[in-house]
Every structure is written in C-alpha cells, then in structure tokens.
Length: 289
Image 1: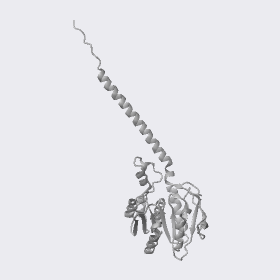
Image 2: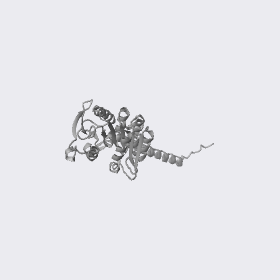
Image 3: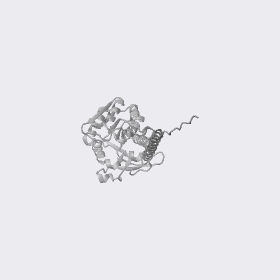
Image 4: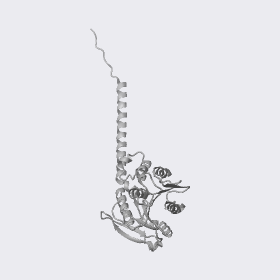
C-alpha cells in the first residue's frame, strides 16, 4: 500500500519571514517616532514663531538723559485704540525732511538714540514709533499691525507738510517698504540690511520645515518693492551673518529706478550706521532733490 509522504516544515523560510516582519515593525516604529518628533517641532515653531521674530527688550530711556532735549515723547492712539509711544523732533532747517524711522527687531526706540542725534545734527527731523508689544507700547506685534500702524504714522507725519524719508532698519525694512509702496508721496526709501521676505529667512534657517504654510508674518518685501515709486537706497554689508548680502542685491534688482545700492565691505549686520550709512542717505537725498 502506498504510504503518505511526511512534509517537513520549512523552518528556514519561517525564520526569514519572521526576521523581515521584525525589521518592518522596527522601521514602522522608527517612522512613527520621527513623524511625532517632526510634528512636535513644527507645532512648537508655529506656536512660538513670533518670539523668534519680534524680540522687544529693555525699557524706554528719557531722551533728555541721552542729550536729546528737543525730542518729544508722545502717546499716540492707533485706529483700533492701541496706544503706542513715538519719539519725534521737527526739522531744524526750513524745507528739511523728517525721517520716519522703523527700527529693528530687538531693543526699543530709545536704544537708537545716537542715530537720532546724528539725524538732528543734520537739521533733519525724525519720527520714530515704538512697535506694538515693545517698550512703551501696548498690543501685540504682527506684520499686519506693524504695517497698519506704519501707514497711520506716515499720514500723521505727512499732515504736518514735511517731506518724508522712510527708513527701515533690519526688521523695519519690511514695514518701511510696505508703507512706501502704499504712500507714493514718500521722498526716499532707505533700507538698512534688508531681507527679501521673513519667510525666506525662515526657510534658510529651517529648510526642513514647510515654512510657507506655517509662517504667520511672511513680510514679502520682494513682492512689494516694485510698487515703490520713491527713490530707493539699499545699504548692506558684505559680512552680514544675519541677513546675507544676496537679499539686498535681489531687492535692488526688483526695485524700480531711481535706485542705489551701497555695499559696505567688511561691515556686518549692526554696524552699517557706523560705516557711512547716514552720509549715504544725505547724498542720496540731495541727488533726489
């Protein structure tokens, strides 16, 4: 009689399949951990992004204590009721302009007192608002609020009849450009160490994040500068480690004539004023007249 064959189990095949299953489980577990970590990092950056962009520090000083006896300190109420502080002084020379000054992301208005002193020594006036959320001002910082306030400040200053130079320093270059793009009566736009967009800077710092989706305040200066009809002066340093020179050059390419770019050899992000910025403004203003 025929006998039935006894089939031996393929223990080697089972072992290989078991190993593959364990490997895939480990890979899946690792992928889940990476996804959770990525999501947590993205969530943290989204929730805290404004603390990286806007860095108000210090308390407002008394202008007189800095030798600026003729500077007034006003509390100005914005359209939505938010109160902000403004340092200002009228031009000493008849027909001289007033500099509408938008400062950088750190410190406060009073930490720029030496610059204001030099502006006044030239016979020019200045009008320097403190951003929302910064020393002396209420509210919270945001691109939308800064630009809306900037337009109000411009209109308030323009009502006095003074010619206006709109000056932006670092973070303030985005605000200054947005204001000048919507106020063609500006006499000159000065951009000190400008950026193409805050979202571009965020991408450079965090290329692994979808910053275009996460950014609350993209501040696209590169898109707005073509709408500026006033003469444009861009000043940038070759050794700027915070906002590279390529940002200033790209903005120069997109600006319309008349325009000028001053590249300061060896200058970093915060020392342009000490390396000829103000004389360049005076020269450009004379040429624009």
